[in-house]
Amino acid sequence: MAQGNDRLRGKSAVVTGAAMGIGRATAELFAREGARLVLTDIQGDPLLALADELRRGGAEVETVVGDVSVEDDARRMIAAAAERFGRLDVLVANAGIIPLGDAMEMTTADWDQVMAIDGRGMFLTCKFAIESMLPTGGGAIVCLSSISGLAGQKRQAAYGPAKFVATGLTMHLAVEWADRGIRVNAVAPGTIRTERVSRLRDEPGGAEYLADIERMHPMGRLGEPAEVARAIAFLASDEASFITGAVLPVDGGFLAQ
Ligand SMILES: NC(=O)c1ccc[n+]([C@@H]2O[C@H](COP(=O)([O-])OP(=O)(O)OC[C@H]3O[C@@H](n4cnc5c(N)ncnc54)[C@H](O)[C@@H]3O)[C@@H](O)[C@H]2O)c1
Image (cartoon, rainbow, N blue to C red; front, side):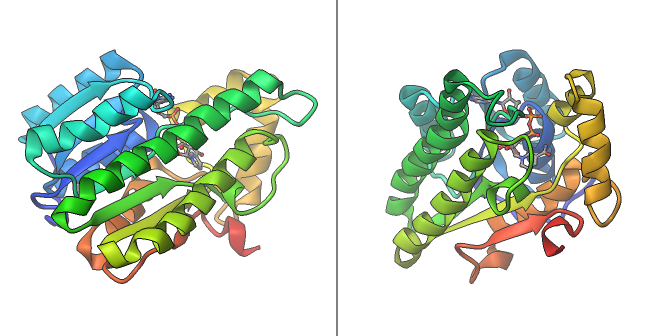
């Protein structure tokens, strides 16, 4: 395993949605940086395979399979950190789905599902994380917002508003808990080459959408999951000790236009 810089040495961290994409890249980097990990996902098999791989590299890893939108599952994911490692220092609230479609295409069920997972799931995991961090003097939370949580885009009539929830939750929780030692920040990735985004090529209109979106990033390419993971690790680490309530674009210049 490639060596990290020990920026998270000994910290106990929960990563939701860790089986794939940005969550997986974050888990891999956190392991290299010395974190003790609780990895959670709704998909058991790839989650357990990742955990085994990281353990072989020497990391301490616990897993919880569950759905962040279900209150008891969210509680179990967070509780696992204190149970296994005695405390919780970091939450990466990453689990989410990315349904794409305009307001004519998106149904009530689509809206409810993305708000339940990306919205309520993020709220619940943050809520239980704060509860767990308070007795030990604080911690750091990093939420996954998006360029779609800071600006409008086409074909994101349900997903985009759900990412505005992530942005809003980050800012409100940051102010609410700053004096209790809990920092809450977000990253706002541009389009990142994850499993979800790669699958777009097979969806109606997906290939054209991808070509357009690539052109819309001033750097002329999509981002890589590891590039988002590095920003998450910075915000989670003590290097970001005076940063809270920030929403950091990791977007190849998209939002600067
Ligand atoms: N990929 C991008 O371009 C991009 C851009 C901006 C923001 N984001 C955000 O980053 C996060 C991760 O996205 P990704 O592209 O890596 O997606 P992904 O689909 O590749 O991975 C998401 C992971 O979350 C898990 N998950 C989904 N629903 C869950 C649930 N209810 N409970 C627990 N786990 C669940 C999935 O099983 C999967 O492992 C999301 O919050 C997304 O909104 C992604």
